[in-house]
Length: 354
Image (cartoon, rainbow, N blue to C red):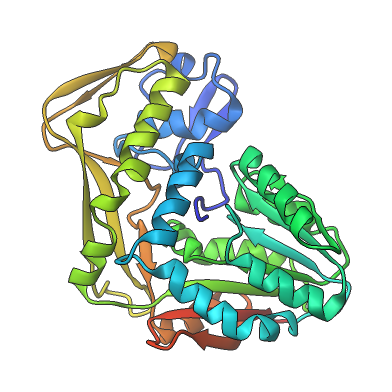
């Protein structure tokens, strides 16, 4: 799973909400009334000029299940299968990158279905292993962790429920070498303009004996991407989060009055910047949505966009030059790089630079 930048850009300050430049909060006192701290970023997105929810909000327990169903069965998306084939061939190589005793960490772990291959390789190499899955859906990863412990002798699972960077900081005081996995192209969901900062934040919490393994989807043609990120995602990307908004804030938002739209942005001006898929919900009519718990009405004009990402990108698509530049800009070196047979998906090992 794959679902937040790990950084909250919305904070509660003396009864008000502070947002990124350009956002407009309509009533500070109203939106902070009876809102749990974890949901303040969601409310800030609802009331901004660019209406949105953060990507991690899509991953409640039901959303995690829907996501897993798409990525493991879709013939047009295919990232799960491509990365699985790489891990089948190179999990032992990954396991060799750190010494024992090692802590295996997975950011956005979800069901950890592919991660089993790395767990097995590390158990073969080290005999025992501590695994820390990090995910916003704590209930889901606790269930997954219990099953993993039943399946693997010598494995101890310590789930951490929270955002990516919360998990990274939680583990920063541990002295053991850490193998940190960020699989499934999940890093590419991070806001395009915050990716280098996030990588620098991760680097600041690691030592030179740690390693970061990223799964990154490589550039593809426009039509293939539009098909891969099309209507098979409607239930996960639109229907379920709208239902969650209604539940969390006692709303009357009608999923049938919005459609999921995707587009591909190719060749950004900066050669270091990857191509990316963007996605949003488009209002099919002029309408008003009421969130009673917030005492808040949201007006949409016909055709208005509602984003499910903080930044412009839903998912980035990389080339090797851009991967190397990402490492260089953020305090890492590209230590190793593996691809599937078609060379359209990469799993990379970043080593912290002293």
